[in-house]
Amino acid sequence: MKILIRQATIIDDRHPDNGKARDILIEDGIIKKITGGIKSKVDQTIEAKGLCVSIGWMDLRANFRDPGDEQKEDLSSGLRAAIRGGFTAVGIMPSTNPAVDCKSDVEYIIAKSQTSPIEAVPIGAVSKEAKGESLAEIYDMSLAGAKAFTDDKKSLREAGLLNRALLYTHSLGLTLMHFPYDDKLISGGQINEGIVSTAMGLRGIPEVSEIMMVERDLNLVNYTEAPLHLGPLSSIRAVDTVYHARQAGAPVTCEVALANLVYDEAVLGDYETVYKVLPPLRTEDNRLNLIEALREGKIDVVSSDHSPEDEENKKLEFEYAAFGMASIELFFPMLWTALYGKIDLQTLVATFSFNPRRILGMEIPKIKVGEKANLTLFSTQEKTKVDRKKLETKAYNVPEMGKSLKGKVICTIFSK
Image (cartoon, rainbow, N blue to C red):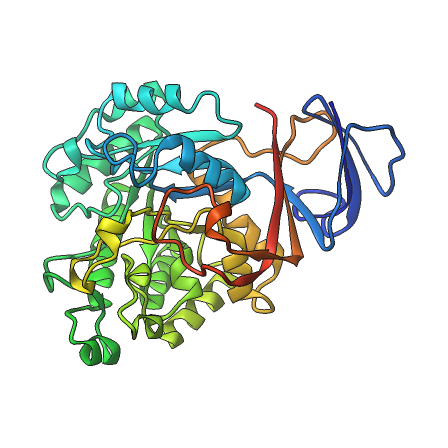
């Protein structure tokens, strides 16, 4: 099959034509030609206003609830939603029921996603049953295909366990990810601690609960000299702390979730549970500072942190509703609507294309003649209308319903 991509601006600083509009000819999954203009009989032509092309996007953090809670999302619906979101690879979190903590669990994900037109990247639990008590079967899971290890939104409160996990994963050349949050500092926290939490009568989650854990984790990184990926972070103070540590030589990277770049705590004023996320939405000043940090290259990864929930777990009184937002399918238009004019496209796209793969030690695709096509095609000028009936995700907690957003994913082309 021959596909012609017509006049797409290349977004890839490794490419000699970076920032220039080019025609790209793909034949049977292989990039055959990249020039200013191609005349050829083809089976399909792809063109759009404001069309751009980059290497295929990768979401570092998505929950697909499979196995155990398939009524919220399953691997098939989650991967279809990821395709619609522009991703050709997805890091699948282990916080399922039961948690992905052994070789057979990883094999289940790989087997069930084998026919998907994108790459499912299993991420295993660090601790058994993700309980934070003892290490899981990390080596066996890595042999089965797990690319990284984390307990997702369950922080490792015991420093000794994180210390052992750092030493073990480092010795095997594996990636360790950790969510820094001391949930015992103020138990039962619901939203950011501040004026809004006081006005709403809800228990707050202070920034210090994140910052304290970040500082502890960085001390362990310096002690073990082992790499660590921290996130998702919500506080600019935490991001700056990680950045300064990296500048001083610490092997540490960080991540911020889509929601914390797009929204601030003000959207919670009507007790709308779709915006109840963890880490919580913080102040508008904090959000703007996170965007500036992203622009300056202090944030390595922007993830969807896709956390699908059903109506039963989300349409409740605020304090009883589950944390999480389902955002993988609308990832780019949500981001582009919020960040348009505030950041250059190349810097933004790197945080969900190059950087996640680099952190996981995966091969990074190339837009190059002779290479297998692994591409995301998207428009910065066309719009996305959010229509519940047209979404692939099963999730109830999808934001922006009925709205028109800037930017649109056109398609993905991925040749395995």
